[in-house]
Length: 262
Image 1 (cartoon, rainbow, N blue to C red):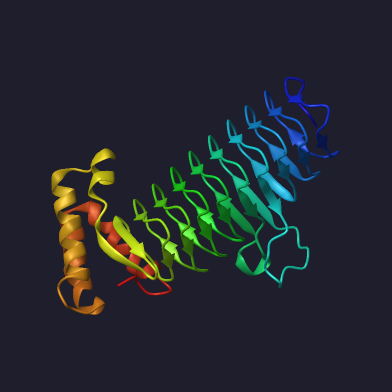
Image 2: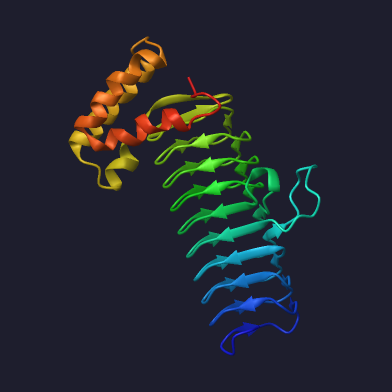
C-alpha cells in the first residue's frame, strides 16, 4: 500500500505488500521488498535497497547505495523471517549496510532514533544501536553488538561480536574493540584501551560538576587504583548511591559478558 501523498520515482520498484507512509519520497532506482514498511516523511535519495521484514520509522533520510534488511552474513542463517527495525530521524549515509537478525540472536537488528551512520558503516545481524549515536565512516559492528545512547565510534573502527559499548562512550578511529567499554569512557587503539572520561561530551549533555567528579572517581577506582574489579565494586556502588550519574557505570558490570577493556 502506497499512501497517496508519497512520491515514488518511475524507475524504482516497490513490491506489492510494502507499506509506504505519507510524504515518503523514494528517488530513482530504489528497490523496496514486499515485507517492508516505511514511515511518513522518510526520504530515500536513490539506488537504495530495503528488503526483508524491515520497518523504518518517520523522517529518516537514506542516501544512495545503502542496503537495509538484506540477508545477513551468518552462515547459520537459513532464510528465517528475521527483522530489522529502525526508528525515527536517522541519517543513513552512502553505502551503509544494516543486516537482518538471526533466530539465535533474538530475530531482530535494531537501530534507534536520531543516529548518524556515516559512509560505509556496517551494522551486522542482531546488533542493537540506541539513540543519538554516531558511527563514523567505515565503522563496523560485528554480530550481536550493543551500542548504548550517545556513543560515538570513530572511522575505520571494528567492534567484535557480542561486545557492549556503554552510553556516552567515545572510541577513537582505527581501533579494534574486543571487550566491553563502560559508559563515559574514551577508548582508542588495537586492542582498544581506556584513556579517561569523555568529559567534553558529558559537559555538552548537561552533566553537573558533581556528577562529573563522581564519574571521574569511579573511573579512577576501576582503572587507577590497582585493585581488582571485585574489590572496587562495593566502592563504586557507594559512589552510585550518593551520585546517580555513577549508577550506569556500576550497572554495566552486570551487563558485561566479554570483560571490560583494561
